[in-house]
Length: 172
Image (cartoon, rainbow, N blue to C red):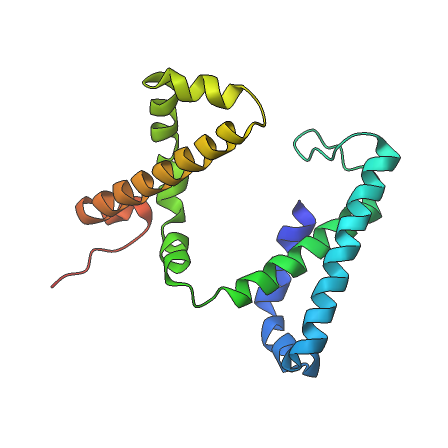
């Protein structure tokens, strides 16, 4: 994990993103999409290869990475794909609004989820049931409601005390 953190610091401190934007591969969308597809496919293949070699899934919390080069290849493929996806979705306004409120979602999402578990035991029992269609639909509904309530709670906190969320009060 420290490797990716340090890599991000190096890229930011040396303005390497501006350098990468000037490379002609990024200007030619067909070549860029081909690079993204190849890196994502390499990431998926290395993930499956790593799983078949270690006979267990990768678990970062328990420091089970499997074959380290395959782990880094899979991570790099996923990162390249997510960066491309972010470029494609940069003009979606509801995602931008959600992205600006991630701290409030991170801090407040647990309360609606606990409410669904304790107040509505039906959802708890349904979600504990496994990978059924009704459990997946319930999980999506609970996620949507929890994120919406967290954003609303963040909006209230921002009006009362924006310093909690790392923002400044705008004086009118």
